[in-house]
Image (cartoon, rainbow, N blue to C red):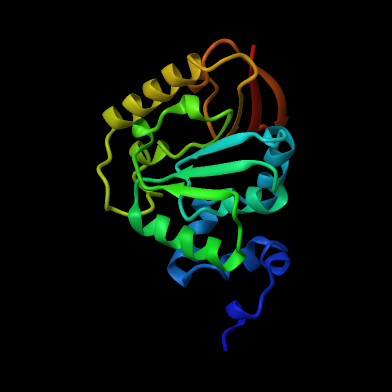
Length: 199
């Protein structure tokens, strides 16, 4: 029996290395660059985790952020949208192992999502792959600077249309990707993690 079948939910959440045990080795390797660390997710939960909030993780990868939120904030609904089907499959397998019911995943491009169905958002700049030729997750999707600009504009416009009180947590994201009208209320992790509220 492998060590993966012996860990409890609490043990998986003890550290990023323990959480990695939910995934195959090649996913663990790219995760050190592309998935949200647990300590960052916990900070985000404190900001976004309002009672009965519905949070969208834009570009959820293998679901690490969503699953961490789902465990530590059982009264919120957390949804991850990810365009790579195989990453969704890894997320669903991890969710099954953890037994979390308040987490779901959608296999779509985020431009196919109605942002108005959500109260708050988490964005670990998943668009950056389009302009960063070194740290791409894979070569299964199209990349271009034009796509980067399109995604940024689409998200910007969508966030502009959200009602006052909407919250966004951004990680490694440029400030000019957030519309005017959102107030920066907190910064953490050497200013890499920022919390915004629509005024």
